[in-house]
Structures are given as C-alpha cells and as structure tokens.
Length: 168
Image 1 (cartoon, one colour):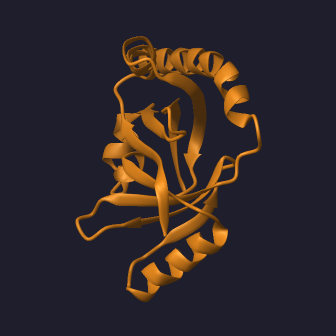
Image 2 (image 1 turned 60 degrees about the horizontal axis):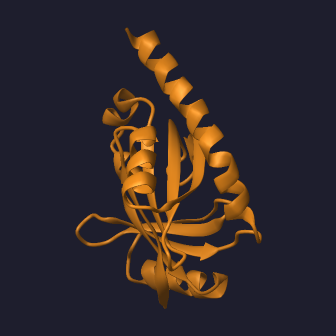
C-alpha cells in the first residue's frame, strides 16, 4: 500500500536559519516556501511558513515556522506541524487505505487537496500523526516553486519581524 516517503515535517525556530542550514550545510535544494494563514487539515487559523527541501530520491524534508506560539499553546491539536507523510501510488489506493483505517476504528481526516498532493491524516496508536499523500502536482511546479521560494521566505521574515515588534 505505501510506496515511499513523501515528506517528514517538523517545527523549526526560524525558517531563514533552517533554509541556510539545509541548503548551505547539507546541500539540499530549497523548493518551496508556502506561507499560509489557514491549516486545512485541522480547520484552524495558524499563520505559518511551510518550507520544503528536496532529497535525491524525490522525497522531501519539510518544516513549519509558526508565527504565533501563543495561538498554538492554547490549541489542543497543535501537533499538526509534526508528522510523517507517506506516499501512496494513486487515489484508489488512498481511498482503500482510508476505508481500511476507518474499518479498524481509526479516525481519518480528508482527503485534503493541497495542490501538490491530496492527503488523508490519522494517528497511530502512540499518538504520532501520519499523512498518506497522493502526488497531484503539475509538471514543473516544484521548479516554479523553487524559483519563488526565496521571495516567499523574505516576505515571511518581514511578517515575523512585524509580528515581533507589535508584541513588544
């Protein structure tokens, strides 16, 4: 059922610091900076920058730089930003997996369309958040996104600075 790793996502302190480390020190390609206000899988407002780095095999390492920690501390479902995303072959496989999970009594959210993939979300018995993703990206989207990523990161940095100054 599972094809390969799609991405693993963690929180980070600072998107710029993370980009510098993963590109300059580890040599990965910075392919996306998705600045969003809304988290569709939990239906909550939580401004964040979701950055992606491409691995040689086409999988990704991703991070969330979240604008307001105070908003997340108040949320019971703050773990959305840390998860393991596994890729499945196609939508039919994903829907069969969803049925299998639900038949086993597992609560499943989705499918959620992210533009680059369609995902379902659920928790394992230890409480780890998992995602099953089907690639839906258009050819060339990652190259276009990579070209825009530095500008999106600069915009995010300015927003974080403005937010920090307003909090003082």
